Amino acid sequence: MTAQPARPECGGPGTALVTDASPFKPPLVKAVFRDVTPMHVSRTAAWAAASVTRTVLAQIIDGARRAAAQEARKKLVPGDLLSAIDRNVELEVGSGWYDHSPTFRGLTGVLYDAEGVVAPSRKRSRSRRPSAVAGAHRFEAGVRKLLRSQGVTAVPVMVRDLNGIASVFLTDLARSAAMVVREGGIKRFGTVTLMMPGEPDPPPLPPLDASLLALSTRTGDGRTVGRDDVLAATTIQLFGDLRQRALTEAREATRNTSAD
Image (cartoon, rainbow, N blue to C red; front, side, top):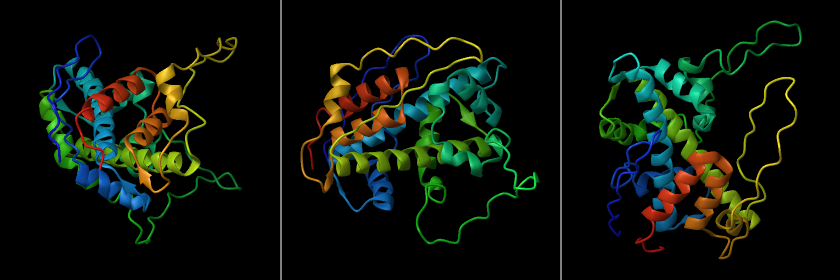
């Protein structure tokens, strides 16, 4: 496999540190893809997915680090994670993990039955089918590497949350990439509009730039997930500055990588 080129640190306020290669390696990425699709995953697709996942987790850790710094701490706690997401809605990814973590309890809503009684929590499935939640531990080494790259540590439950978010996000990305292959492109892009009650409707969103529109139609066979399929899936899963950053870094990470 071709070695990844070193990338310079991206400066500017609100940005996270950029490492020279993703801590989430292609074998792990391909294992996640195998859990959701029988399609072949090219090398460039695996590197792109690894890069996108790294970008997302690095930004989440950076937000949590900033929250902890306000209390002069370098050890992250779950409250820092909530603060990071609360301050930047773009970081609300991997939400499938939220139902499984005490950190997010009370934020995902309380379910009531037909009689108005609080419904009990869902029982864990006995299915043998691999799940993003069950496989979250596979991401711990990469998460700890990202924490070290930003000069912080985290309490065990915080590490577990970051593992889970990474696992669920990459699983969602894999599903979206497989959908792009099956459907021959994408019809929707990840967007969000923040509004307060009583406010007038916001102005229409600006048109998408050519680089995003180019991902709306794919070429190639229907049996292989390629780099552009992962980039297209990224536009579904992410939005705003985080999406653009993830796309830019994934393109850079795969610039010198062979296709298969």
